[in-house]
Amino acid sequence: MKYGIVIIALGYPLYGNCAFNLALSIKDKCPDIEIAIVYEPQTISKLSERELGFFDYFVTLDEKHYTVGGKKQYQRSKLCLDIITNKLGWTHTVYMDADNLWLDRPFDWLFGELVKRDFFIGYNGDYNPITHIKTSLNYTYWASKSEKEICRYHGITKTLPQTVSGFVYFKNGSEADEIFKKAREVYDDPKAPTITWAGGKPDEYCMNVALGLRDYKQEKSHIFYFDKINNTIPDEVIGKKYWGFATGGNAVSPKLVHLFNRTVNDLCIANNIPTRHYHIDKKDIIEERKAF
Image (cartoon, rainbow, N blue to C red; front, side, top):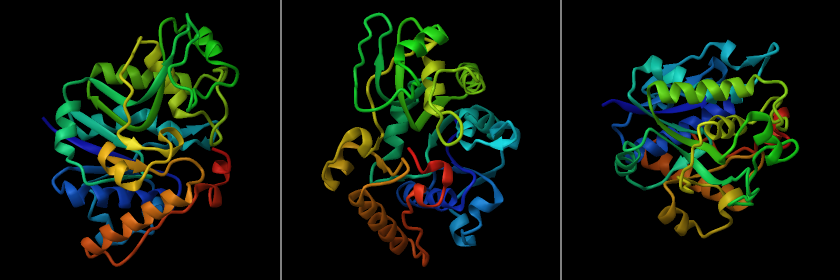
């Protein structure tokens, strides 16, 4: 059995810097886990040779997979995870968003639980198209109109999942290939009833639909603490309840910025890294991320 972690860092050096911080946080606790970074030259241009040494594989993804109408839409790359990891020859894959940080928890134990499954994703609840009941109200389905319209348009009859795609696990093979292929088809559908996000579609919308068409249902589960979903809790509680934390979204609360920067600084000191890549809000440097 061969598995590893994939981090996608495309478009901007901010993501390459974040990917290094995440890789450092993982390797600090689990030095033998293999990490692959999916990159473009500019995204890792700010990283030193020492920092690049925390990645085991450097993977390029053909631009056609994240170019739509002549414009790069980087969020589509996350829907190509099967293409990426089939090239690596792994039998099991864990994906983590670059803007996450791993905390002091045993990854081997978590993987031992995940490997019992074929697929796992952050899951915040679901919508029932028959009863119109949502099991969670504090996140989004990315609908341009309503969840009812999503289900009607795509032919979802039982469950519309509300996924949180900052953490994904899957067993490589035909089932994962079918899920990601369907998600890409949803992304490429110009009439899909979703909002515009980062100049394209939210990848979570596409995963919601792809999984909903398979009547996929999962227990509510969050590997990474995300304050926009999990509310504000003390720092010490985050480390007890979650394996890490996310700084997703276009802007991050001062409390989480402080936790992120403090954690990065401690990791760099412990690993004799002279440089620091502290948090930068995406809205401040990425035009298409001024909202969300």
